[in-house]
Image (cartoon, rainbow, N blue to C red; front, side, top):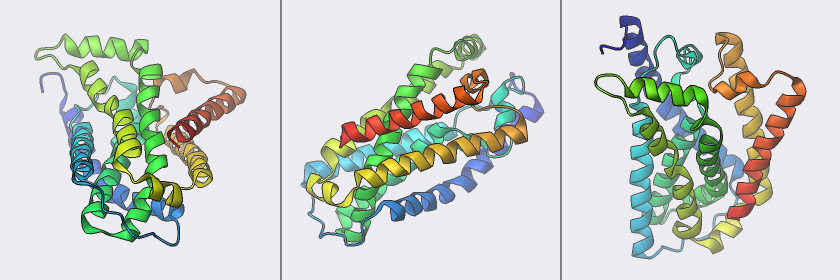
Length: 264
């Protein structure tokens, strides 16, 4: 509290309220996306062996804990650009939050489908598997490629680490971003029935969803920028031309495609 003004502490409380409102919204959002990707005729559920169910339970717990950890990060100071960028939708502005919330819902619903022998629920989660998986891979890879070593982030981490008490922001960010790719690979490679997955998960539909989500998220950031005059990621401020934006969007969509095809 010594490092925050009353306005900044109030902003932190506001972020918590926005988190609370956004959780049921993103649970519903998961099922909207799943209905778009799901196949019409679910196949009978083949109950997985006990070790797989235990694995599904473990990765569900890990996914939930990581998501909850993301809700408990300290708010930024008013001198930080993201303080202003988060003014209206809080942490839901970040793609990491989208990934962590969808991943948590996906892991829990996959577990429930196995425990309850629910063919319709299993079909929905199978249809979402590659999309959630590619988001998990994307968040981990892009965090370390674009954010972790960015000079602004390095400087901020050093600043808050020097406080009393120290805030280990760099380590916290690593813990929040690194597991997503491993949870995705475990879900796709071990926790799912591959026969049902190949029947109920459409690669073409997943690639189209990846394109749609790329454009959706770009629109979300652009609208938020018009409202706040701040980007959620410092690197976006370095993109100045329409051509550079086009290459950026193509690169992000291309990376998602690579993850989808690699997991398939």
